[in-house]
Length: 367
Ligand SMILES: *Cc1c(COP(=O)(O)O)cnc(C)c1O
Image (cartoon, rainbow, N blue to C red; front, top):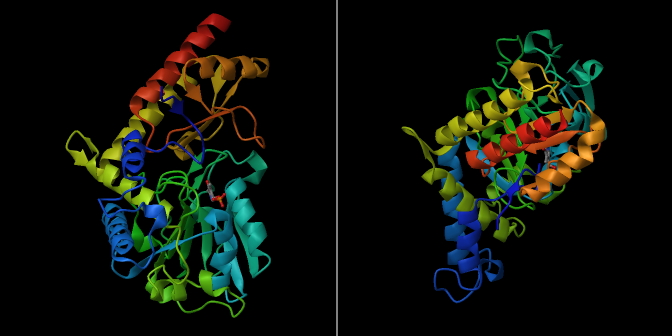
């Protein structure tokens, strides 16, 4: 039986996708070989790549003056690759809103001079500093913002308009853990990156979407395989791309395109469903005497819901009970403790209904 998997990543993949991949594992579309075994330059794989690229561009409405790149190394490698490509060793601005932006900030120090424009560390990363309070350096090469802090459960629901804040600096967003969950306002973005293993597909693939005018500025020490302009010039095939991960991502894109909710489809449908899921869980937490979420309401993540049992001695019992109900991977990140339910696109509403049913029953029995 398939359980409801609340893992923060690598995370659940839609069952339809896994089943189709299983069927095509050893013989893709009658060509006599599986996708893992194909040359990345052959006709078959090129068609998979082109379809995936096109579906992604359509689903996220990526404008023509952006390049969509498929890389490797994950989000953490981008913490180095972004400064190598955009900083020219100079000043960059960081908004610290949780563990992920902190990690990005530390890594950037190796390549450039990052400054902290705003930080929520003093309150334990329970809110996103309001953009109007950010101290922005007009000469910064870019501003880094993690738009969904996967560990702290803090989400930026509306991208800042840096021009309106008085600077003409490109905004770099780490949208690893909420990519494809809602539309993106590309007019406010210079570069967006995401590891694939939350909402895109298997680990091993990294998505970078970059405005064309930001290409061609890489530092001399930047590895060629990570130089965005080289990767763009070779249509993500300068080196062998993670072919199987791209193929599964392509199946996920097709699954996303098939999603409907009332009269909505694709990303808008999944966004509506994601909001229903998150509301159900947050309402359950807020309405209970046992559970709590500490994030300021306006900045709560739709994707990652950390919560605590007010009596922490019940943690193990909670996790064990959840597991017997087929509710998996609810343990919070070790740095913050407690619980975390990740409600990525592949988590159906039924999974969250089952979770809140279990939570209410657990509280009733313990009260
Ligand atoms: C998962 C995640 C990453 C990617 O980490 P890798 O292990 O390098 O793939 C980066 N940023 C955020 C916000 C994440 O949630």
